[in-house]
Amino acid sequence: MRARPSLGRAILYLLMLAIAVIVVLNWTYGRLPTTPHATGRFLKVDGLNIRYLETPGAEPAVLFLHGQPGTAEDFERIAPLLAGRRTIAIDRPGYGFSSGGYHDYKSQLAVISGVLSRLGVHRVVVAGHSYGGTLAIGYAETRPAGLVGLVLLDAAATCSHVSGYERVQARLVKALELPVIAQVADLTFSQLTRKVLAESAEKEAFSPDPVDPRHQHRLLSINLKHGNLEAYAGEALAANGVIRQINSGLSGIATPTVVIQGSKDKLVHPQCGLALAGDIHGARTELVSGGHMTPYTHAPQAAAAIQELAARAAATQRRAAARAPARG
Image (cartoon, rainbow, N blue to C red; front, side, top):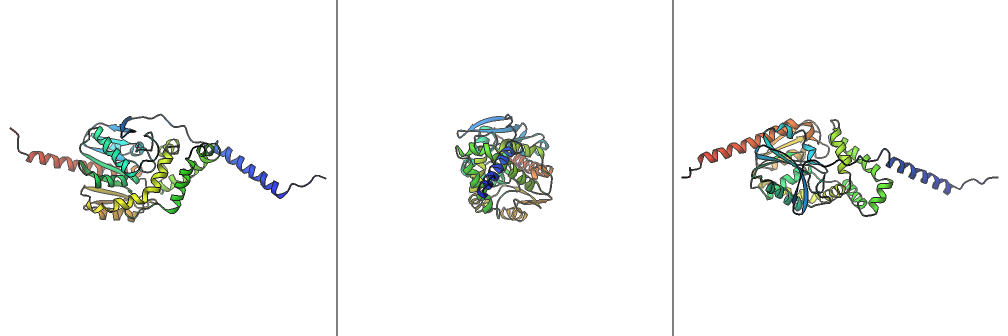
């Protein structure tokens, strides 16, 4: 008579089967798209290769800062609405095709300043989305010269914070980026895990609107690759401290500011956006229907705010020039 398999052996067989299923799913459903070739141009700033997209036009120029994660293309619906205006969108350090890995708050601000200097931009409106808005605020607080306008799209500030769950997730991502561990995880389960979590996060960010397929494809093919993930984990772990730091300087911002906030934003709660506008002297709030992805869902409103601030700055400059005494 054949002996019955022990309970322990049965559990082992089931575990091996589950591992096999996960590995198969990792290389089928979970397999990430091939990273596309980089478009645009590159600048060397502070030893980093920074990728940027630029359209020619008049100054004041517009600088776009994407969130966490993201790429320069995150403003692909806004930039075309700014015909005649010079626009520059960068892959922030660590993201997209710029030099990878985590670069802290001060390094990010230094790179922004360096990009504008290298490109010969003297007067600029900065438009930042989500954590890009956090950096835009920090730039206004520390480098106000030449900054003529701020457009903050669902900016993470005031009462915004990274939750304990998000911090644990970031620490896990950081651990999975370690040498050897990253290679083993890629082969077994991490592509599947990244894709499932990223698609869930995309739905939350765009909710209640549908996910933009172009944005999601970039997320999967670029932002879920190594280097980008290290940047995401580092920023997520540092974000609460950075937000506290910029909050302390909000009242000192004198730059004309428009805050555009989604009324159903699940990532930056609407009350945080409203509080942000209240803390910046003279800021105007536009509470719009929808979630966190206002660069996609409310591109015309964002473009109109940018043009308004740029036109106001240009008019002020013309008046100043007209009052200046003629030189003999």
